[in-house]
Image (cartoon, rainbow over all chains, first blue to last red; front, side):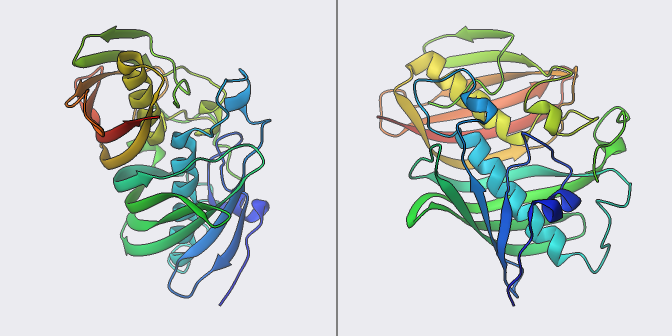
Length: 167
Length: 120
């Protein structure tokens, strides 16, 4: 089975917004729950505002982008349980809980299209584990041995939000 | 070297440790999107803060090669702060191994990371 999710579909699933929404498109969804996501790197992104001498895309944002792709895989896999639980108006937030065995073997730069190959390894109640790799063309620039994500209501995180911006 | 997605309010560098204090602002270019109406310090920004701290101690020629483990155990929301204590275990080796522990202002641990860096 293949499927594609455009940016509008991604916005309907994730609560992150510009410039922290770091997945542009889902190009494949696999029967085992894994997927392939892409994110184009642009020099217009805020991390390049100060014209840093090194145009390497921040590793932190690369990992965040992979994490968001993994969250999408989780939410698409779990949709039969609660298809609209992000867009239902109940503020729920996917959060990183942990990472294991992340290796950085290359870099991404403006003009590159980063491709995330995500494996959805395990889904539990309120948490999921994923793994995979990050590529630019045929070049593997990072591998993720394990990513653990959890989903939490706003009340469990901090002060009450002032108008949740999802949807 | 990455870093500077978040700017520490204080930084103290010794040969083997770096301590930073980061206050999460109510608004920021990236924070405004994570999440609208409820700013939560992104877990990956702990990685960025770690890179920044290592650069402060060892210079900009070091680059992150691996994260054997990172655990984000408590959220840090806008207005809150945390301290990161970074220990550089092997500053003269390749790879350079470091450990970081982050504690919120209320005393609760919010992150713990181990990382390896190399020199360009």
